[in-house]
Image 1 (tube, one colour):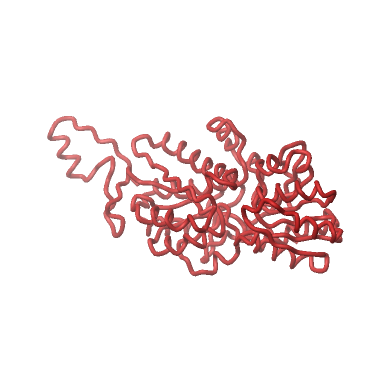
Image 2 (cartoon, rainbow, N blue to C red):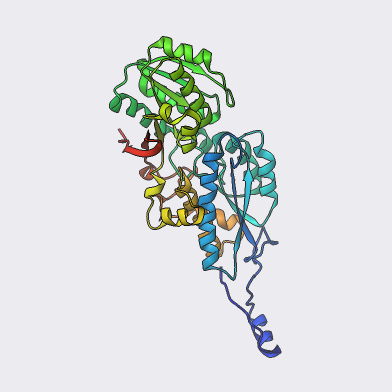
Amino acid sequence: MRQRLVRAIGGVALAVLMAGGAAACKADDSGSNDSAKACDLKIAFQGPLTGDAAGLGIHMERGVKLALDQYNKANADCKVTLESLDSQGDPAKAPPLAQKAASDTKILGLVGPSFSGETEASAPIFEEASLPIITPSATRPSLSTKGWKIFHRAVGNDLSQGPAAGRYIKNVLKSTKVFVVDDQSAYGAGLADEVKKVLGATVVGTDKVAVKQTDFAATVTKIKSSGADVLFFGGYYTEAGLLLKQLRGAGSQAKLVAGDGVNDAEFIKVAGEAVAEGSVMTCPCAPADKAKGTFASDYKTLFNADPGVYADVSYDAANILLEGIKAGNTTRAKMLTWINGYNKAGVAGATYKFESNGELDPTQVIVWAFKVQAGKVVPDVLVPKS
């Protein structure tokens, strides 16, 4: 996108410049999105900003905000704005938000949705509107099998995270008795299924709970009776924290292993520091505070907080969209072509290249294990791929 500052210095000079087609906010010449102005464009974020899973979504939105803040400082004559859509991570709340974004022709791309369930509910709307999306965190494998041309995933899916969690339980913890629980969400159930495939006969019991459940007495009894030394939980941090707290109260010392939905400092607050100590969480991401360049310090300067999980991936996803706008891709069709052809390293450590189904290039997929130590979530180990 060309950016020229036009200053009228007399009527003749202005006429000459206008005849040459120069303008600070030049309307796009082609196809769809004719109403969009090159200096009046938006990107969007969709994810949980309030509710039980807000701890995860807030860091992602902040990553997007940091990218936008830096872009607008460098392009003060032609800024891009952000439309934030608070889904609370709830699939039922997602479609109206998706429709809002789809109907705003100034929005050329969206970072998110954050969770798998809300992505399943939103993507058909985005597909119909040809609005490209890059999710930094929705990991259910089936999302890339729907034929959605607008779908892109900036991390590995649960076909990488689930087996990695299973290998960690088997090879690092050397557990012989694992109890598996999931919250029946699109994400939690899918991740638990992949873990069970790896662990096989090591799984001594399973159970299902519900999102927003608070009393886990029945599940606690099953876990304790099984003699499990490891509990794998597929779901999000609020339910994981409450379940673990009640499990410890019943006298079980089974170590909690969970996926990226639990990988947030809020988990420690819910469970309590002493109860959470030693818990392990996997993530198809690198430690955000170890991101390349000045990302971590820039994030802390802007938000007075350390970056949380997926903040760096969200930053990278936002920058893919912003670079696309800067390069002149001011329609959704052009932006989709830009994303599909993207091939560049981000601060999160991956080189972002997307396959035809929207998945990240498999050679770029990693899975880290994190652990709770002295009241903080800290990196443990990069889990080997086999």
